[in-house]
Amino acid sequence: MSLKIKALTKSIWVFHMAASPCNNCDIEILDLLTPRFDIERFGIQLVGSIRHADAVLVTGSINRKVRKRLKRVLAQAAQPCFVIALGNCSCSMEMFGTSYNDNKPLDEITDVHAYIAGCPPKPEAMIQGVVALIQAQLAALKK
Image 1 (tube, rainbow, N blue to C red):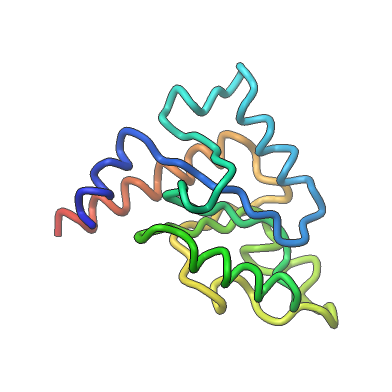
Image 2 (cartoon, rainbow, N blue to C red):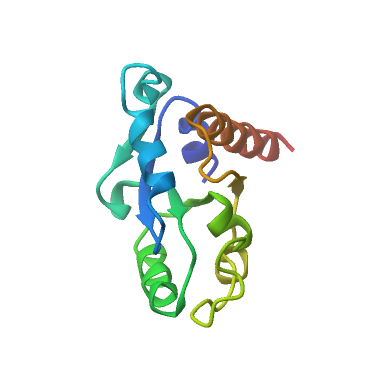
């Protein structure tokens, strides 16, 4: 496990799971791939399969239907797999917290390793959140 965490300092592969979002966060994630931000130069790469991912970026509000799928997707990930809550909906259920369809916030369903708040969060905040996650894991490894 410690070898994988050390490897994350050079390259982290992120799987994006859209859990019933409004798509504002998704548009900002696409902005990360443009030449202006170019996250791949930092070793952060979006992947299309959870089986290849080191981290899962969850956007949107976790409703009843998505909750089961989220657990199934996270069970397929190689361990350790870090969960990042992106946007106010997945961090605190701000907008849809009183909805009849919402069960629980993301951190009550699974362990969340990083929170990136905002509606939508800026690309700079997303990069900073992933870098802070890596630094926190390395600091925990050194203890």
